Amino acid sequence: MSEAVIETTKLTKEFIRDEFHVVALKDADLTVNRGDFVALMGPSGSGKSTLLHLIAAMDRPSSGEIRVLGQDLRALTDRAIAHWRNAHIGFIFQSFNLLPVLSALENVELPLKLTNLKGAERMEHAATALKLVGLGDRLGHYPRQLSGGQEQRVAIARAIVTDPDLILADEPTGNLDAASATDVLTMLARLNKEFGKTIVMVTHDPHAASFATRVRHLEKGLLLPEGQAPEEWNAAAAHPGSEG
Image 1 (spheres, rainbow, N blue to C red):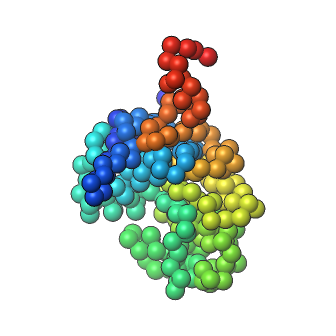
Image 2 (tube, rainbow, N blue to C red):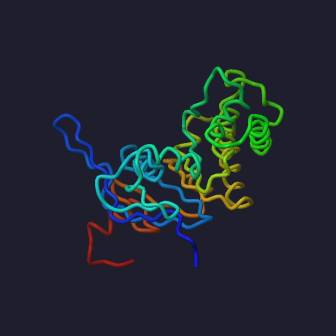
């Protein structure tokens, strides 16, 4: 039986902005098993990034249940969440989030500074991660000296350097050209297939989603049933008695 890495039940996130009440995510039921590569697809405002941030414990739900790696995230203090996230989660941002004053090696080393590793060990781990993503010859380069695709590879190396249980990627190819995007997606697929990493990726791009092993669609804050795209869900909602 597959081991569930992520389990959510009726997960809901609401925001109050001025006089507006926004339901960003409503009653989302999601199970992700170890070794899955799941793409969360949907247009802007569909709730996909909200769901990813809840999984990463970057935000707290308004209601519902969420367990990640067996941990009830609602039970953790903010301080405990920071340590839990660093130990278990690798996060890849659309905008890379690299520090311009640090080299590629130093950027990748950053998450290791919260561990018990000594300086030389941290650098060795960081260099290994960069070699894994094909940047073994760019260790001393700064972000300004790298292409967008190379910057995202540094970001991926930073996400995997702690050997996390779960990799979360928020539109990882959104700022890349087509060739660089394919390189990054191929790398994520390799991490999934060859290294067994569990990956959840937010994207609006069908090409990016094609690299995943499972695709879940979101529409207006609702996580659609497995195997349903928005047009199918809308048709079923319009004709609730029909099948097909």
